[in-house]
Image (cartoon, rainbow, N blue to C red):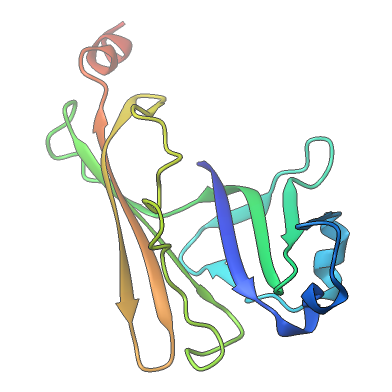
Length: 169
């Protein structure tokens, strides 16, 4: 699945508002990310994940005068899906992705879905995958003693009619 991951955090070491900047923000090359602090967010249950490189690394980095860092990644991720074919060919599948900070606990990084917009507002209204249609999705936070886990759950249904014909001929 191809997705965009957006992260926002505050890094006081990157503040430049005291310099009376003439620019409201700085758009920087993704190579700068290697030189600044990051929350080290990972998909802890993915089978594989990588940042697209077409033709360059698909990362957007912006820093605001108050030290807010905004990063967008275009990521291809393969997550686990509970494949239940008991109702084949009209089956439903559940897929789950879980994100957390790999290197930091809740005292250092408090993972949250945004509260200023629907966490998945950029999703198309209807997403059709080969043989499946995304019928529902939800987000949640699993709060634990040491870390918060961001969860994304999706429900997929077999595309009606197409699959039986495909396998009959």
